[in-house]
Length: 171
Image 1 (tube, rainbow, N blue to C red):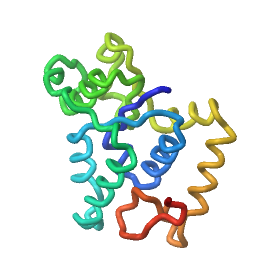
Image 2 (cartoon, one colour; image 1 turned 90 degrees about the horizontal axis):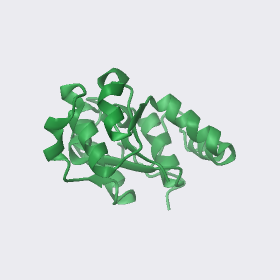
Image 3 (spheres, rainbow, N blue to C red; image 1 turned 180 degrees about the vertical axis):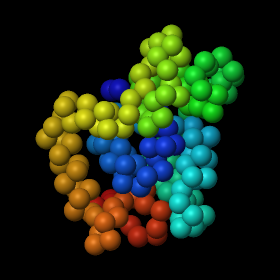
Image 4 (spheres, helix red, strand yellow; image 1 turned 30 degrees about the horizontal axis):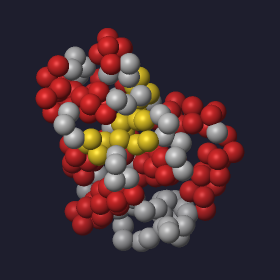
């Protein structure tokens, strides 16, 4: 199974994070992140999200994916040659032996920084399209379940949501 470090920028938007995590839950890939990435998620959630709701979201992610959190990467940060603000992301990916970094900030992960580690940075659109190509029926089912869980306000109700509302399809 492929593994992917999810950068904070793809975990902040609730619908995108929900889609990525539903695909991981259905075992299309193994999600990875670090405590530093999750702290960045918490700091960058919209101001309308309360601290308690942000904590619930992070706690739910850690609960549903207990093996996703990478540790022991800190000593590698200074060796990384990508953009300084995202060196911790690449170091975590290297430490975990990840196949991909899923990020909207592709310019922060140039090929010269990734190639020595055999890691590819992918935009979330491309990553999700690749998952769709590999397993179209299952991904479409995930998207239908996600759409069914979408409330009238257009926000997806999921276990990673930042409100206290539980997902209708949560187990």
